[in-house]
Length: 282
Image (cartoon, rainbow, N blue to C red; front, side):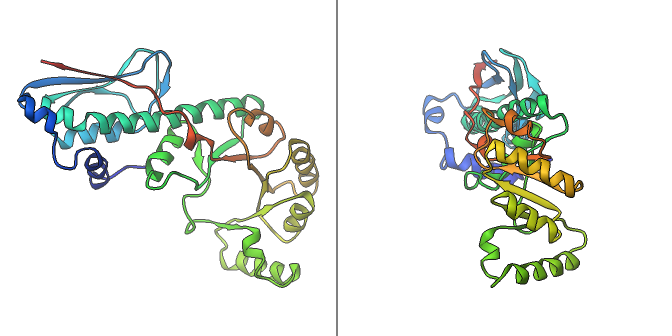
C-alpha cells in the first residue's frame, strides 16, 4: 500500500496553515480540550487515506479513538474517524484532513463502482488508471484507486516498456522498428513489451513482431470486439488492454468485449466525497 511520509503530510498542512491559525488564537480557545469526528452523509463511501489522516492527527498530539482502514465500505451517516486533543491542534488539522479524505474517498468510491460494473460482465477483468493524475496528487490518487479495487496501469516511465507511435516515428521503416523491438525484448527478459495500436492491422502486425501486450487505443466497441476475436484466434496468450474514452458510464460495454484490462483516467475527476466533520468541546 502507498504511504505518504511525514514531510508530505506536513506539506499538505502548510498549504492551509502557513503561519498558524489566527482565528483560534484570537478567540483564546486553543488550549481547550475537544473532539473531532469524520462521518459519511447520505451515501456510503469507500474511504481512503484514513491512515494518513490518523498520522496527521498524531503529528499534532491528537489521540485517536477509532478509525477504519482505507478500502472499507462505510455505511451512510457513520463515523469512521474520531480523535481528541487540544482545540488549537484540532482546528489546525481539520480542513487538511477533510480535504484529503474528501478527495481520496471520492476517487476510491468511483473506482469501486467502475470495477463492479466491469466485473458484472467480465469477472476477471482488471481496471487500471493512467499517469494523468492532477500534478502533485499522484500518491494520494493511486492509493485511492487501489482502495477502490483498481490498480495503476503505469506508475512511471522507469517501471515498464510501453511503446507509442511517438517512439516508432524515429525508425525509418516497420522492419527497422521490428528489429529493435526484438533486441529490446532480449535485453529486458523480465519485462513485458506493451505497444499501443490504433487499429486491427497495427495490432496484428505488432503481435507478429512479438508484443506481449497490446494497448488498443480509442477503438469503437464494434472494432474492439472484432480485434479481440481476431487476435485471440492467433495469439491466445496475448494480453489485450482497452483504453481511451472509458468511464463508469460505458465501462461495462467495454468489459463485455473480452479484453483483459481497461485503462481509464476517469477516477481522477471523480466528485469529491462530502464528508461531515463535527468539532465539540470535551
